[in-house]
Amino acid sequence: MAAGRGRVDPPQYDQWLAELDAANGGGQDSFGPVPSAPAANVPTSIRQLEDELKLLHWHKLANESALKAAIIRTKRVKGRDRDRSAARPAGDPERAAWLQAIVADEQAKPLEVDDAFLEAFRQREEEKQRRLEAEVAQHIDTLQMLKGRLVRQAKEDKRRQQLAVATRALGPDPKSLTDYEQRGATAVFGLTALARADADGDVPDAAVSLLLRPALSGP
Image 1 (tube, rainbow, N blue to C red):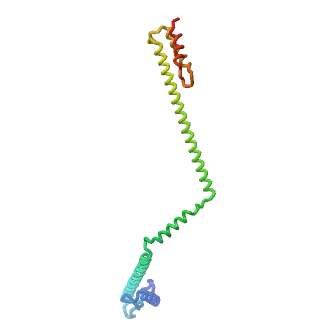
Image 2 (cartoon, rainbow, N blue to C red):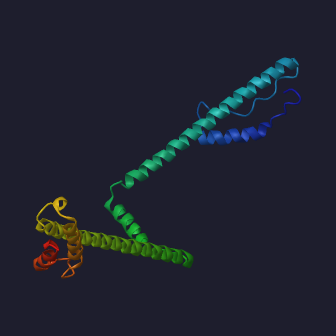
Image 3 (cartoon, rainbow, N blue to C red):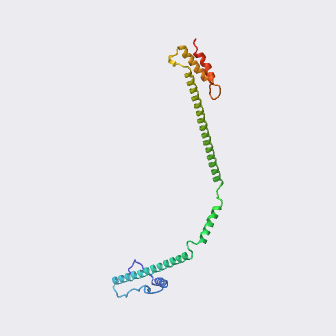
């Protein structure tokens, strides 16, 4: 081989080839040692070409043998996996029960947390509780306020109805009344609004009559 390209060690390659042949079981792909150099009387350029061609052919045979060995190993591994899968069916009830037992055992174990996590969790829960209580209290206050408005509105409606009754009891249209009669009617309205007999704002009819009588009488 030409200088600078390096020389191969035939004994070492002979050992590799022997191992590959043993793994391959011999056959047509088996090959012997690296071919020796050609005779000294062959021209140098032709000898270098022959050496390179023989070396390339030898590498080709070695690569093919190694590739076949790798394919054989892969097939053997796949075959063992298939045998194991066949030996243990996927729907094995014992295996399913075993897996369920493991999951149940893991779920039954207490959760291991530190004190800082527990304290933070307790604070979050207390904050949620305080917020909920504040919202409930605000809701109750709102309902009470609405109830008070309804009660006051009902009382006002009742008073307006009573004043309407008192106005009708005056008889004539207020526009046709004299100044004295209008002043008396105004006084009656004010006394009627103030003369509530009970907490519900009811004004007895007798009280209304007594209040209207002086107003309707002349001077």
